[in-house]
Length: 412
Image (cartoon, rainbow, N blue to C red; front, side):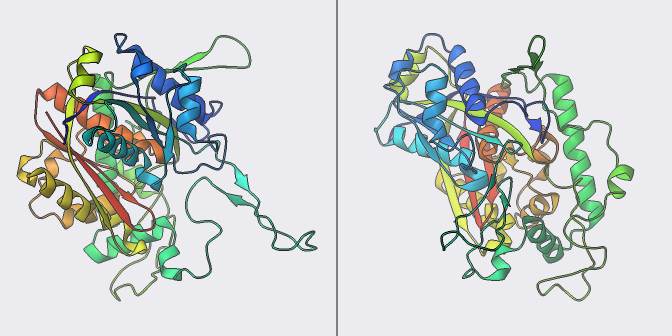
């Protein structure tokens, strides 16, 4: 197997739902990330890129016609460069990185791009077709922004509970209080704000010139969801999003309280894109670059769908085992913060893990979670951290709706 190098990684700043990137199509966001990535490696002939792998969790809107191929064309790559879009929901971007790395490792490619994109703001409503022509009754319109829709009646109802209800179940299982979740969320915002202030994201950010109806474009240059001025007092005022203050469901422990998951201790809805340049040894020479890191191993796991938030536990365990590493070797672990309860639940099941290396620059609760882009962002962030340290071992991992987890080990 060939060694796979992660040469460079860029991402757009992450926009809030209905925020700075509202007017930018997802295929344009993806094209921007690709364009900016290649601009940083001017010595590479784009015609040498053998495939573009991009993750996208929605696929129902403007990105519907294989956004990887559309983004490559919009970015100005030669028409000879193929593209493929993959969907593993929240881990789609990381899945794209793993698939591109696998192609290089087995010799199917020497140079590939990987990444992900999501515009949750621009996700459309969908109207299912009727089983009968010209129905007389009403029909239902579904939002494709997030979560279950058009659920198959054959699915176990417990498997299709809302994502936040799954987080509530994890909080109950591990005795994670509302206060612990809020404290974790506050720490995420503070770490992200400190990283912004220190310029730690500058190496990975590709600011977006957002067009306006009148006047010059506005440069969007910083993650929009970070709240440096938030506080525990402000978070405590937020009402639970998925349960009332006294409600419990799905066989909760008798002593369990009501809702603990709020808008403050969960990731927001977001827009963004990320792109990575991967090569083998020969391709690396063609770039004229020193790589940020090399890809060591990946791990995939699955659990009952309503426990999806805990699936990264085994995924990370498997990835570390394949890489011949342990938690003691880790310099950083970037675990996507879908919910504070979900992250704290995973940490509770890793007794050997040192939480001091967890999400050192903040996570998705502060930075945002544009579904299909997040996995690629995490891989790029880990790589930039390792490069800045001058070496080490890092992991990027995510939970995935419908009960999966995915992890990637990077080394330098």
